[in-house]
Length: 104
Length: 208
Image (cartoon, rainbow over all chains, first blue to last red; front, side, top):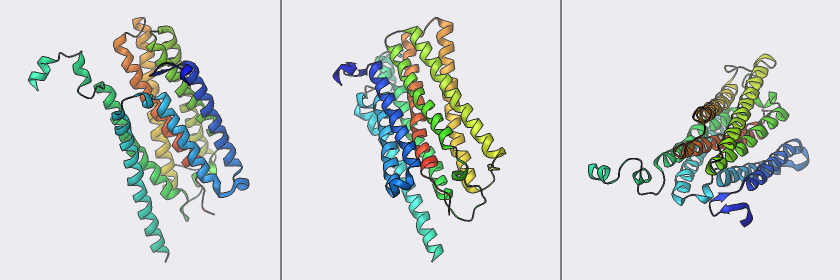
């Protein structure tokens, strides 16, 4: 990987292209899993979530250069992401509980 | 504060503040961070209604054209590659390369928007799924529509940078940060689509 960076903070165009190929492959696997759902079974859901998270992290880390930036930016950025996950998990949980109560 | 302003003239190290990060860059990252909450609200709303029984049909998951949307996703992913190559080119002061990659990114973004317009038109005319059909349809159109609006804003910024570069014969070093900021915004739009494609298109199912 060291040869793919011009110096500590700047990946080369070749590395960017390799990452794009990887992202395309991951997207292809996602679509294939969608069509193979009956074969793979309920594991499709965690697989798809993991693949999306991988693509998400790769784009942020390499294309947005967050892995080469100061940690302060990572903290700001991840704070918004974590806050959103927590807030909306509570919302979904609350509506889920309300739906169960309404059904019983 | 006045002492600070006098001690650090505008346009020098004062722009970096005590964090060591350019103000506009820090502002962009904070803005993008807040966008997680913006899109999170719409994704959550979609999840609440996407599989709820008893709503008017069709449900969004009944009308998706996954092969078509997969190609759109691929186009948007590749636009992230061209955007990062534009950023790389401007860092090397390669003005011609910067213009080429900025234009390529704007064109790929335009293709994505065109695909979304085509998809929305097909949903309305072929399947009768409109904004007002059901809460699930509303949530789908509002979520993907706002994402498309973000892409459109990105395309306009890209064409602006391209036009500036053409008019001025190249982007000066003081414009390098502009390319980086537009790039950050563009990649963020891409990662939001990564989430939407998986959660909304691939994982959601209509009720039995």
